[in-house]
Length: 105
Image 1 (cartoon, rainbow, N blue to C red):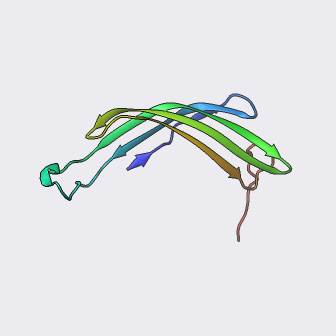
Image 2: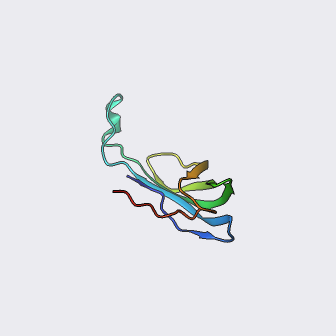
């Protein structure tokens, strides 16, 4: 199981700040050689900052985001710090990330 839903806040029309996080819980035992694993399950939680920039050009809009997470509460796995950059195309946007309602029949 994994989750990354944490709130973000619009600081300006183009800038978004917030927290990023994740949680992972292994629900089945590891298996294979060596047999000494005996039900080895891992769990981890991570939290850190995120920043997003909304961009718009010629009727197209997108979101560029940067996130960083420091893992805490590790069980049966090493802790790490991870970074993620993502780019989203906002289909049907009419400006800075505001989507136009669509009706499908």
